Image (cartoon, rainbow, N blue to C red; front, side):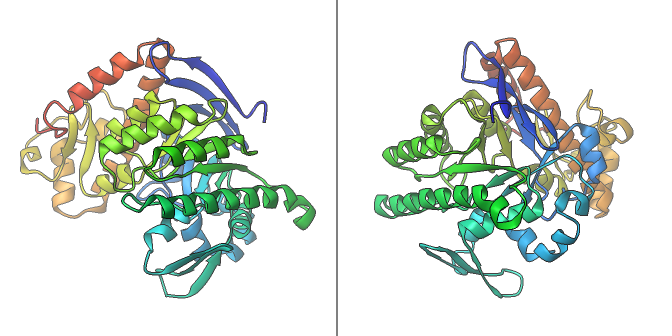
Length: 384
């Protein structure tokens, strides 16, 4: 674990930092955005293209991969890397958030979670131990523990009960990780991260941050954010939690993909983040530019011969005009969504390069302000 994570530079005017995260399939330079490949694919993208952009860490979903293709198939290929032709790193979440969102189809009890598949209604059970076992089959380079995500609006007592159970499950997950070699003859292949919960109560957040920080995890996720709360609450509880979580380990905030949330996370010393937003919005014609989000389906693009973003080296920007991409979306051609997805992932990768350079030059806060002032100058929408 000593060489697992190294901080390479701390910004002198903020908590932003750069680092190196050494994983089984290569080193990740942080802060880093992770594209989401829920079912073993980043939607609309060849893995070779994702790699060519520069990404070496993508996210998969334990819940979805467990249901389809299933552990038997993944075992046959010795994991998701070979099955999906991705030779770089994979982070998998525990499936806890997906089950959390299926409130009508699941029941939480001390041992774990019982739930019905959203696909066919079949009944299943996740325990902390089983989730570790599934991610061992997947071959996750970073694996998340099973946790309970508390939505905004529930009372303190229910939030504490969920937090306490999350902590107990974390201890059980560690025990399972440590006993795998004795049980199966093969040590755990990845790195197990704990997850901070505590909802939207300051005392619980602080307690969970300290408890998870003190456990034997090489990295920590800050959970229970970006789940429907206001931006003000997001910023407040992110800062509060990051202040308590140890700064010796890599820190990950799940499910944030807008540029303001990403930069807010970086300001608070967060190293990793992911979101489906980049590719989901792209499939509907919404793409990132320095001047806000550009909707390629809008009629003002019909005669526009410019690229999406001047200077961008993605295929969409180097080969095609906004007018052509507009035509693709109006005709419902799948190429439109594919090119827009490549652009959005390329843009976010380039943004992280700019972020890291600003941190290394001790000017991250000024970069953040100038960038967001321009991005949101027209309400975050590029109509040019």
